[in-house]
Image (cartoon, rainbow, N blue to C red; front, side, top):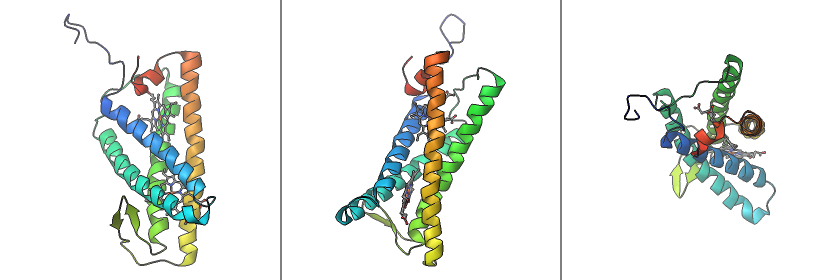
Amino acid sequence: MDGMGGVVAPVRYSVETRWLHWACAWLVLAQFGLGELMHRVPQALHGPVVSAHLSLGVLLAALFVMRVAWRVTGGRAIRFPARDVASGRAAGAVHVLLYLMLGAEIGLGYLARWSGGRPVTAFGAVIASPFPPMSQATHHLFGSVHGWLAWAIVILVALHVAAVLYHVRIVRDGVFGRMWGAG
Ligand code: HEM
Ligand code: HEM
């Protein structure tokens, strides 16, 4: 309320929504970079890069669970009306797809590691596999689907960023500001 009886419309998402969005966004990009790097660095660096990928991966998994819980329990109470039905549907579809693909990617990451009979490690903590090692073929399948899905996510994120740029440069309706925190 504005103190004069009128309701003041929110100008940005809540601090929790914004923090979860940006923490997940940076982690996803870092994970992609580390994943692409792990097979390209000298042998001596392979272990540390995989280890960093696993630690950040577990952190991302925890944040992702919090983010989805926050989203479905109505935590993201501040909502903004879409410009029109079509763009609202398009944005909604991309966002749902991003959530689904991220969830699948995280699950596949754990499977890619555990299926090879190795634990997932995070900042020194060891998360043992809940099942025995699988065949080499299955282990490789999880690894390659994880690798391909990473590219699909990056392409979808590029589309998401293109939509944001369109709003910033052409529509100029403050869509970026409400997630960034300014405006
Ligand atoms: C890996 C990177 C990213 C992922 C996975 C991601 C995912 C998402 C998702 C799922 C939403 C919908 C939130 C919801 O309604 O629950 C969202 C909203 C948003 N994202 Fe991202 N995002 C990423 C990167 C970025 C980047 C780089 C930008 C800016 C250039 C950005 C700007 C925004 C904005 C402005 C919104 C709010 C849209 C609105 O108010 O309708 N995101 N993002
Ligand atoms: C959005 C999050 C993630 C992205 C974008 C991502 C990306 C990647 C990429 C690009 C690779 C290289 C694949 C290749 O070409 O060989 C990789 C490998 C790997 N990632 Fe992830 N990753 C993510 C999350 C995770 C998580 C949460 C875990 C487990 C906790 C994980 C575990 C692994 C493992 C074990 C490998 C090695 C697979 C192999 O080569 O057999 N990743 N990741």
